[in-house]
Image (cartoon, rainbow, N blue to C red; front, side, top):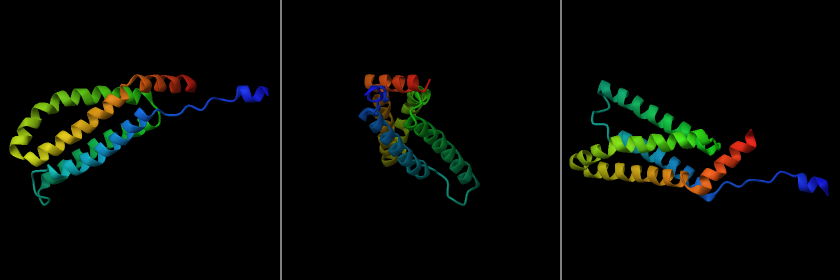
Length: 140
């Protein structure tokens, strides 16, 4: 009987965290396709490889944080929220010029930004914050 009371309570990840992770992964794949479609030089140009490496670096960066968030790391959640909000401040003014130059790519970029914003919204929910704190306190 005593062992039944001492058994650890299984903590289930909230649906908000699951939604955020799925949105982050969707945004990651969407960003890769979008990044390559926005390259303005031909593949035989030497700058194409530089642009490809920049896109790959961005994918690795975002992928690393999505992975760490899926591993229940609160620091990764906080960093991703701050990084996304700062990057939106930088990229939103550029979005208008992208819409004027190539409307379809501008629309796709807007969709990708909205995916990231919705993921940030889920990561900022009260249930999400409490769950990350609970998980981090269990690991201490």
